[in-house]
Length: 170
Image (cartoon, rainbow, N blue to C red; front, side):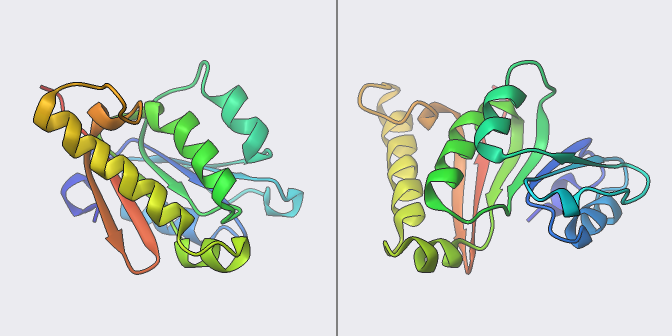
């Protein structure tokens, strides 16, 4: 998924730290990146070594505070609460902070369907955005489209995750 950008990625944000294993994986996979993890559990906030920063924050509040004056991200990975409303709120708040050609990934989407009790809400929401992106490209009209439709290059559905790639510079 990230093979074509591995050496060029500078900033990775992961929502949901747990024990920090994936933060270390991202640090190793992206040799030039600063990796930032956000978690609402204070126990997850610790020193994970060089090029990793752990921030204690509730994603519902974090997205409001974090979007105003912070850098743009090459990759954002949502592996947080797995609650549909949190996933959509995070996407809506943070996708504008993804660089052109960057990625926004929602992990463990199969958990959302089990925990929410509403089968496939995140899949349906992303399908709607993909449809709007296609409509926008065909007509170049944003009328009745998701606000980010013009910024979507692709949405790929994998087993357990959804990868959204932002459009490239023109």
